[in-house]
Length: 330
Image 1 (cartoon, one colour):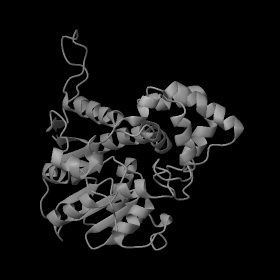
Image 2 (cartoon, rainbow, N blue to C red):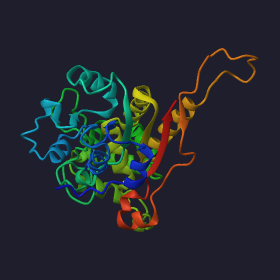
Image 3 (tube, one colour):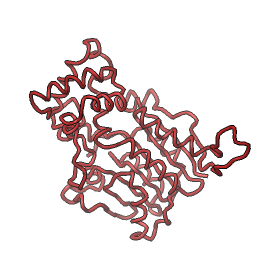
Image 4 (cartoon, rainbow, N blue to C red):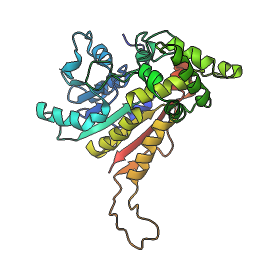
């Protein structure tokens, strides 16, 4: 049973503007809260393609053990539900593959796409994955911890192999950590004595690197470093960039893409792509006539991002940083 509460559930489903019989993609299945609601709306006549790079999330939603749904299986089908174990940035490849194998899908086009880039509560609460600083675990942090080729970068590798400059960069860029330099310096010193291997070892290093007053804020003092490491391990911003561009490509005209971000870097990637795709001409202002011949591809539905209500934040504090943006394909 999942412990995950879907963030902005009502707002996201309404914004998708879906109906019975639609073909919908949930690009980030996670705990499955959004997917369950989508299935209710589209009914038996519709098709839901739910994607997740975490095989355990796929197994939970399908009601299978991880042994029953092996990582090499990739696709699980049941009635009008298609579950795909893959990175959402491979959206086009996934749809191309399903078009060959499933006649009910339109060629490369879907009626709605949803992506929630937040880490699920199930992953945070797992004592084996290393996402949380609240339990001691190996420093893994891979969203997909299966044995796929090229899937071997972990947080432990980063902490023990990256240079001081590289650590500072990811802590500042992905975590917006003000004490990035001191934390990186202490990581370098600590790993000279022994490898940094567990979450509690990392928390201890962070704690020794920051002022006492910083430890008593509402947000735990290790949050930003753990976030930065997770983003680096999973190459999240590049995946989001590719996914967002491809999602616009595969939408039918008049259909919607809904994206929920939890980090300023994620939101910036999405916002910039949406703004660029909404513009017509992007020629320099000194050009007397348009030479780029660019045409607007989307209409931005949310001029400002939708955020969680105070009631939702009270019920689910993890929704506090959520920002939802919506576009409609022209």
